[in-house]
Image (cartoon, rainbow, N blue to C red; front, side, top):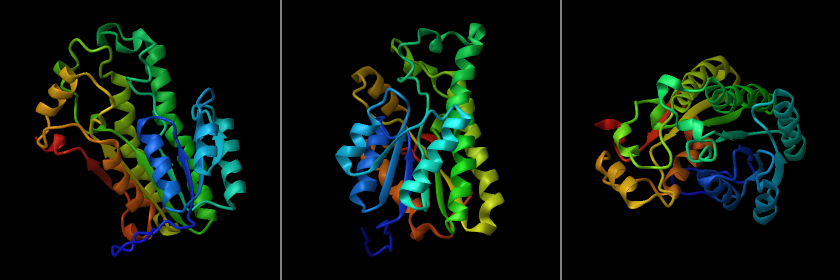
Amino acid sequence: MTDSTGITLHNKRILLVGATGVLGKTYANALAEAGTNLAIADQPGSNVIELADRIGAAGIIMDVSVEDDVIASVNQAVETLDGLDGIVMNAAATGESLLAEGEAFSPFESYPLDVWQKTIDVNLTGTFLVTREGGRAIKESGGGSLVMVSSIYGVVGPDHRIYEDQPFKSFPGYSASKAGVIGLARWAATWWAKDGVRVNTVTPGGVFNDHDKSFSDAYANRTPMGRMANREELVGMVLFLLSDASSYCTGQNYIVDGGFTAW
């Protein structure tokens, strides 16, 4: 896929980690449509293999919180694709994914350490492991791009009022880990710049996922554009950062939030 901007991903060898969530499926479909040589990965119990078969990608089961699993899974992607030109690290423990674990939304004054640790293990340690293993593979393949996914709550604090009467809340491990992702990306960008490995972060604002009207209205009222994001609106930035059109971009945090952080 090429346009006048020079964005092309045809035949680029891409690994997408965290492929079956709201944004993950959107990224997976877009990368497949762009003509990449694509491998997609997600946790045990997910439908990542079924999704991979449907879009013509290689499917990989990966638990990002387990070091040996990440090592083996990245090696599998490298062997399947004969190298790596890019990675999107999108796996995360989110509020909506933790709905079954009621303690995830406990008051901060009594917040459980095990829930905090689980969030850090997936969102931050998992990102470190994928970055370490995947970045080395990209370096050995001649360079390319590593895209991490953060959140506006890694940049600003949440307005807790918009979560009143909702089944999910903003929770501390999420904000802390997503802020850490941005810091890790900047560190890795300066480490690998000389090797032709670019590392950037995409930071989405709130993405509409069949939220009830009271929540989406409350969120919209905090956003200059007056609405939540559509999932397709994050795709362009990811494709840009994976492509050679972003060849002079590294160590940056690209915020796509409808102006949420501008107020």
